[in-house]
Image (cartoon, rainbow, N blue to C red):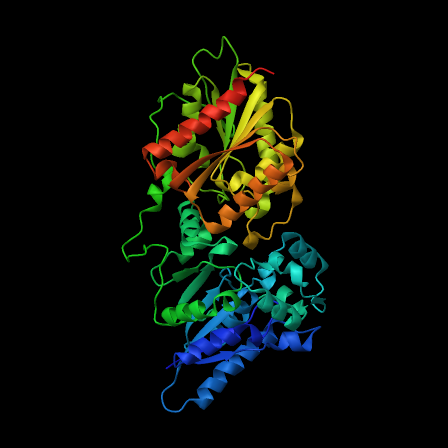
Length: 510
């Protein structure tokens, strides 16, 4: 017999698990939603008290066992995974599996402050160090800042707000302490509307992310739900099915595909596959963090330039670096074939918190490109890919006369809900809504993750409202980062059309 211990996250109690627990028990298994003491006792409560509560639940299950010892599965939602892991450590061998619901892995010495999604708030709480205070719960219209509320009904959101309680800061600021005992196998439940998908994790794994390397083992499994951060409220039945499957050892690993076969080697990830167009094998000029691909006659007549900005985050130390990816090289060589200088660069978007650093890197790179005597400094375009989409905002707002065009391919046009990045400087929709922005060419793919597609839709709606000049090139059947994955005529035509539109803006007289 399997019994589930359901540990709630920030501001919440056992009430959030009510429907999921009922579905589990309807399948003949017992479920134990936990009320953590921290939310009841307030100031001064800490993580150890919450761990002790989960341990007590495990002990009570054992004491009530009639016959065989039940198999226990601990399920933690955001903050709740910290007391769950702590309890598994305190009762080694008694927990069969830990299930992480829309939260990152945890480890020894790491405080649960990381589960607070708002970067600025995290930094403020860490600097204050007031472990005896409390964090007030969100107002009804502020829950989305703590995770995507996609799929949560108005009634469920009302109940979530009404029953929310202050979160004791001691539960967040005091680190998790583990003994070193072997922990049980784990399963992650990814919530796509938060921006977490298997495809995203596999892409980050191919970048060399060290955390994901540790998770890329057959015994670490994942499920993906098409919902937001609170699946126990938005799709309780489906979550119950996933928990039962997880308890049985189901799910996909990062090294397996949906049909159970081995996933392709990260070395053959899409961005490392050959570019979809045949381009001239011209050499690069490497200068610091820049690579330039220069047309043969640029020394006689300065040429416009297109600066291609890679996405991310790309972990520091990842090899090869983005400017050595065939996709970026392909775009730059294609630009040079069209008679303009193609530029790639490595910038420091190593984490979702690093947009300000990456923005400064790009600004410096553009200044260096414009200073090159072979470049027409009054005719520059910037072309952004994937996770660099938020970096378009500063350029949309600055509107320098020499910036003739911006472009973006399958962009993420706002920080995703799970990132906790609320810096208004990197929200392009807010800029285009005001109008007066440079021309913008956007390549939109049809097989996009829903959370990413929502940011594009928001941007396009804001552009229409502000009368901003945005042109869309659609690739209906293509996936994210399609240049190495989809070598169809329609994909090739889309890249050619996007380049044609950018070149038209670059070469137009004013």
